[in-house]
Length: 185
Image (cartoon, rainbow, N blue to C red; front, side):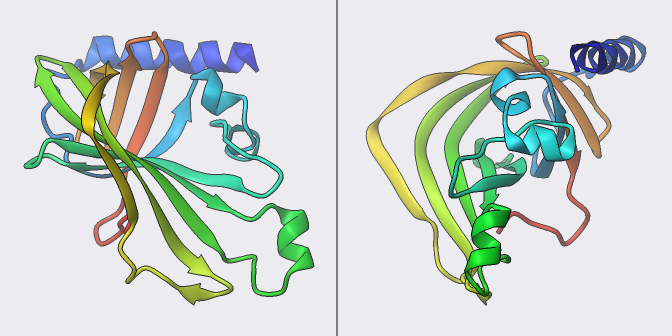
């Protein structure tokens, strides 16, 4: 509900005031979105099922959203992982465990607590199909000769395990670092 979103946003503001991030450093690693008030996330099935939001259609339902950040290469892959919706998974044997990742490929630059983003391309990475792992396959990457500004976010809090940000549009996002050994790949 909007009251719940405002309550969580208030808690993020308190956390940021009590222990503010000194910089946008320590972004590298694998992160999973655990909460956001961004309307494109809140208004989807992912949001309904997790309390965060989601992106879905008749043939796919978002189950995880996150980021893979390479601090050395100054690159971010924003990742949405999809699975078949329940009606389709129940109709086709073996389909329930299928996963497909959509990735927006970005580069970034930091200044203080601000992280500015530039779109470099997109990628699609099938993870499983009919119960068969496809993780060994490289993602299909689409990159053009141009790059476009993608906005920015401000790191409000980052203890290395939990990160809270505010986007250029004023929305909040909370990410948790994936456990050691876990990866989006």
